[in-house]
Image 1 (cartoon, rainbow, N blue to C red):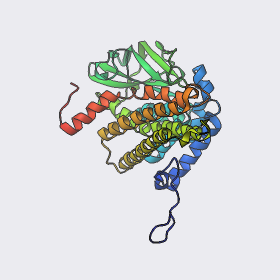
Image 2: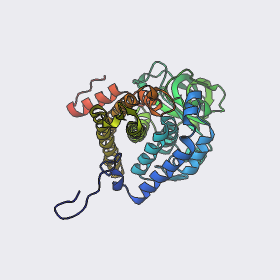
Image 3: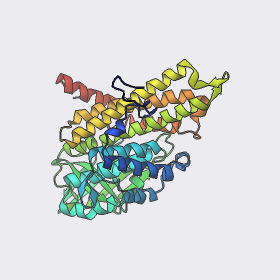
Image 4: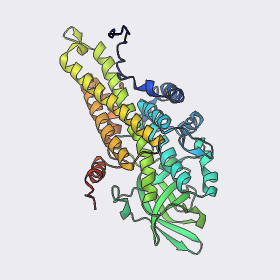
Length: 396
């Protein structure tokens, strides 16, 4: 196409239709290319097998550490201090491979490491963060309980003082990285309100039991944590976190990675469906030639590009210090919901092939069912936005 001024405008890219990646800086594009190459070489060839077997190789942690994506948006203590956009782009590329890999990096960097970085003492930071950034120490984040997910304030895990020590008793559920973690950041009620504790996995009374028979996030370790009168020294408590603000701020930090990551899942599903539609022949022509198939592809393209623009906008706001936690709820609610719709629509284009692990769509679709729930259900994020626009709290 040639404009009135004689400038030739190329046909838009079939995936990045709005040229969103052109808005990235050179450093952010370098992150994109580096992580994308890692995923294609290390994740894509084997992830269907990992999913089928229900495993995530532990060595992936060290490999992600060498890649520089663990705690990459944190400053100091061996962390690169990258922008929120660069971190988001990395999450998108990791989840384009599998949400289990992105979840590992998110929990490590934006929950466990961020909690220690934001709320910990200098001694705690120096003891854990450099090794965690390298992937030599793995962390998990213990907030959710069997009976308390959306209402973490009702948690039953309790830490009591015993002399100079703390003794922690309780159970945490649905904990990513739990059984492979070297350290757990555990949130517990105390006589002084909710506090966070750094719990080494070698602590007597600490056990992590894997959750089996799940049909989502199978290329990810999900565990139950049991703390049976775990005795911790006084300096195990995170000194600067008090009340629910501590864990909730960590969740806000991690949710921005989900806003980007879900678009990685969506992109893979869309790309797979687009290529399949152009090569699958029915009634003597490729199914991409049928109007209904083109409508499906166009609808997927619209939401993929809008969601990616939203992710970029929110991350730019974070880098400028202008991001409110409700903005992140807006992004998580929209992007995960639309990514799941894209995955479901993409599956229909592949027909029966769409439910096999020969193609990535059903794997991403199943993963997104979990992502719709974890780190704030769609209902909770709806109510957060409802309060933001009405001024009325409909939760409590």
